[in-house]
Length: 329
Image (cartoon, rainbow, N blue to C red):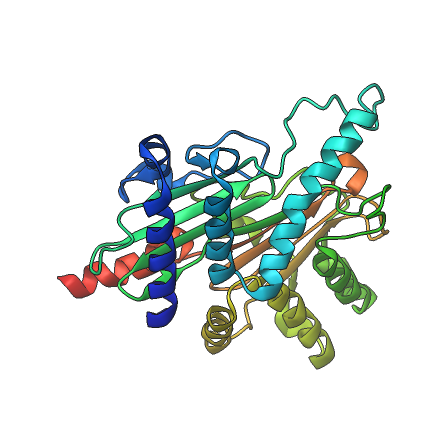
């Protein structure tokens, strides 16, 4: 998708960041676009390659978060900040309950500064591809750009705790819509359609695509087809989809919705696994011709969400890169 003004702003912001970095920071943050590192990302508390936020100066962090504001929608940016803020809450909870089975052993470092920026290629290049990755625990943002075309897939959000159980933010839910709208949709189904939608009584322990570079769409063919829904239920399913696409910046989200709408929803499949009771382990996916949505809430007594939007042709910018190489030859 072509966005002349947006890509220029992202390019300028990345150049601003690069111009503030010292030699050590530059060595950590810069990668060749062709480097296999571009396809690596984690949503677990796993150390990553790139420049750690902790090792940035305050004004560099300010520039970084201004960069994120350019790529996420306004709501997506707020959600990302809320997810990052959960690290402090989780760290305090694990420390407080370190000797109980409830709190776990606190083996991971929990910090709002434990996120990494990696830049691939040269953001000032007008004709060669470039991009960046920002991620850490429960944040996975992958941006690839060539000329004025941009791709933002895969896009991951998670939350632990999914619902804050104590302290000043008790009851707060960073990803409430992802669960509530899906549960509302499931409960709107007839008994027969609900039987088709619920593909397993036991939810998988995580999203099935994890952080894999490649995965098969054939693993997501069992479930309830869009054509079996009433108009009201179709609107309900589309409402869930829009929660995930609205993480993108507004113009990108609008264009992406137009694209998938043109391809139709007739072959779209919804599948649910696990309990239909609140606070019990559950999972769902939505598979369209163009994309896959996955959501899982099973860990930590079903109070720990992983959710992702993957694009079958566009993950890691493969669609815009393919179009570029074809037009170049």
